Image (tube, rainbow, N blue to C red; front, side):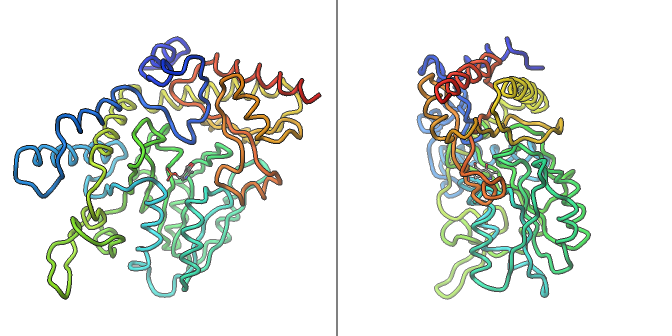
Length: 406
Ligand SMILES: Cc1ncc(COP(=O)(O)O)c(C=O)c1O
């Protein structure tokens, strides 16, 4: 279904948040998305009708809960072209990256000790690697961001060596909206025998992901940014690697056999899902994916692109606007900007007076702020429920902010 301004207006009715907050102009979906009623209902339904712990009970309700959880895993696997055994439920993208930072050394060959990330990473794809370096045995290198806000692929090629153990890169920058060429990055990293991790927190909501096509080893994302509930995320890993990896958390649900002295671990994905999982979250995330699939991610990306082109054109007309967005036509619904030298927090709180919700600050990407030589930016982000009128409201409120400071 190709999205148009009028079809989006209709679709917006699926999201109770807008009914309950009349006049709300929500432009912060890169932080967290809103949820349609079908997703909220799936969550409630589970607790009202099907709640039991999974994998352990032999009674009907427990069997049903287990089946629903397994089905959710299948839906998610299909969504990104993976095998269900490769899908590990986490709390969020951050937990997926932490899991990898604690477990990958069990499969990294001798002599490889470099981790390559980029200057545009969210702290979630930086801090866990810094901690790994501090635990010893690894060092961290950074691919530069060019002045046009894209990644410097030549710099990446130069910094990749035979010692590179891990290349971990965001698919889409949560600040710049830059879409990184993850297939190309994966290909050149593989030539050096590095493991490739893609942080898809910003791309899974809007870009059709095929893990086989990207040919990465691991990919992470969060449910709450893609219409799903909070507290559920996904780590997808290549089956043959997961098989060899040591667990992250230990306890119930991840074992095959336990004696007082020792433990034999379960196979993946259970090996990496210790303790009681967010069962309702997984089921509701699968519902969110079905909702996204019905619209079609290609259509969502196209609509975001349309909104972004429209917004950038209008933002430029205001004058005094610095926009941190590449001129490339590979666009997604994320725009960072600063209005003259007005502090981003001032801009955001004045926009709030017009019920416009944007984010302002460092966006959990402090090193990127340093690279851009700013304390922070304003960030408007669009998703499937945003209309051209939302953009118009943003523009007219920004004009008022500008007048106020003149
Ligand atoms: C690119 C990117 N990576 C990782 C994360 C972390 O996501 P979460 O907080 O859901 O773990 C975010 C969140 O904004 C993000 O934008």
